[in-house]
Image 1 (cartoon, one colour):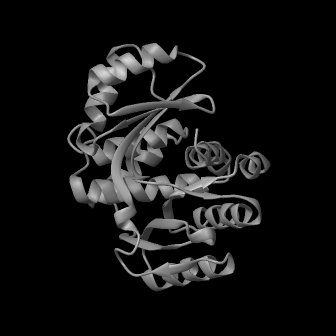
Image 2 (spheres, helix red, strand yellow; image 1 turned 180 degrees about the vertical axis):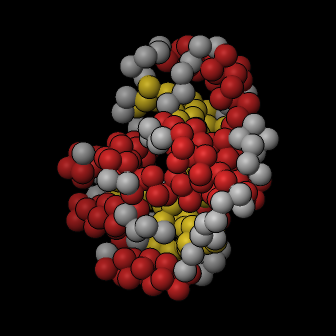
Image 3 (cartoon, helix red, strand yellow; image 1 turned 135 degrees about the horizontal axis):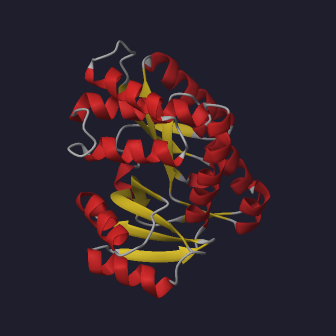
Length: 248
């Protein structure tokens, strides 16, 4: 398993701790609100909203919080209007970064992101400067301790998945964006419980980083994800396993 995917697993573990102090809930509520605003308040008819609601439930968000976020998005309740904005840039070692944000104040957000990037030897780039290095994909995560690899692979491929990888205690099923929900539902019908499902950006090629450079990069990734307006951070880094072990 590459460092990139290992970092993704560490982020998921970190998300559980974040939920306890409300940081993750804030990000999930923003995503639910924007998804409902753009595609309607029915998770069955709005794939983006369904993914957001499922993520919120996986984080043990109370149902009333989810409902309020949906109603704010549809206009049934007053709420803050968030704007989606994406930044691109480079981190230590020339690693490409894409930073997805939801914000009610773009000036604050770009200032926070720029400062954080600079503090850890990174810098922002122009729109399109690194996006070409990533592909939009769907990814489904399954707990490897619960199922044999052959069973997950067969269920995923039969459902139309592109690839299945394993490592660090989980299976990661990759799909086309339009097939994410179809593959997920088919796997669940086959008896495979899905830990999470999301739309993501997968790097076409990875950049190996190690030593002090990797340590600096990990600090940057963590600092960016801790910003209130940042929803997700993607990188094409293959991070040294020893550095990631220290993070865990």
